[in-house]
Image (cartoon, rainbow, N blue to C red; front, top):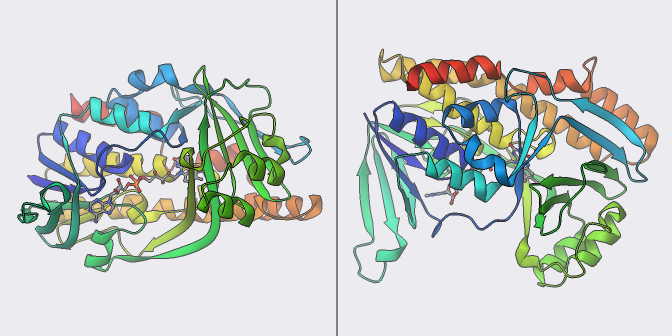
Length: 385
Ligand SMILES: Cc1cc2nc3c(=O)[nH]c(=O)nc-3n(C[C@H](O)[C@H](O)[C@H](O)COP(=O)(O)OP(=O)(O)OC[C@H]3O[C@@H](n4cnc5c(N)ncnc54)[C@H](O)[C@@H]3O)c2cc1C
């Protein structure tokens, strides 16, 4: 089958690697000029690690990453709010791996036989056909082209063109903004965790032996400093004093990613000869660390259903039905976002209780996996062999 994947982020690349290994003829296009700069890190959870492991990508990733067995949340003066142990789903699936996003993309490209066509933007998608524009051919005047495929996969992020063209769902801007950066200095495991401060949340996580991953709610002062290209260490340290000891003397805004978070809700993740994966299907608040991990699960479930080889429409129908559970994760992530931005100790406690319901932190993390990661890895290994 000819498969055209729009978007070479984590969801698109994982889907490409899996479908090519199943024998499909896969093309991946992405409007960006090339792979992403280092930018930020991701916390990969057991569900995402299961998929990366089946593809052989975790071994490539491990050297520059850090394993965490526990996740701790503190208040702004370092008093613990909760500590959650990562559930043990079997060998290699009992921890969170903090890895640079660029390293995850590079590892997925390294284990995939498919080469990405960078600088190729999709302007319109219809069943079986993509209209594309190649930025490097603009001057030659033959930049527009069409691409035919039996299956189109929209892996083109929260503002997905594929989703819009097929009318599958909509994006709502969440209003909250976050900054993320990788700092060139080692971080001790002690003190690693997330801090719920007066200005929102701030996280400090080790990323390999020589880097620290920092993320935080962006206050207006941070947003303004980012827009003017000024140093960000000052505004970040003032908004979130727990970060002050980690930040360098000068932090250039070029090294800091600023994102407004959106939520995407789709009536269906599939349409005629089309499927959505990743943020294109279900962008969510980052507070459960499940955006990219859920995109990896999408890739795996889509590949497993297509491996049944009983017709495209039945496979897409089953994919859609099996991925509905991601909506619970979107809801849990929203609740945690509200709890982490509540003001004052009592409000935090109440918001947290409402957010978690009767479940423990471990229960929330277990449900966030949306599957048994060990079974998912075993099934993938079976079909990829
Ligand atoms: C502060 C923050 C922290 C986060 N932390 C985590 C975490 O710890 N763990 C986790 O799992 N997730 C986390 N996430 C979420 C995660 O970053 C995203 O869910 C994930 O990167 C989405 O991947 P994707 O492949 O679906 O989309 P994207 O990474 O958005 O990739 C989409 C690709 O499509 C391309 N594209 C778009 N439109 C077109 C077009 N028309 N034609 C061609 N190409 C196109 C783009 O260039 C891009 O390369 C976090 C998010 C934020 C904001």
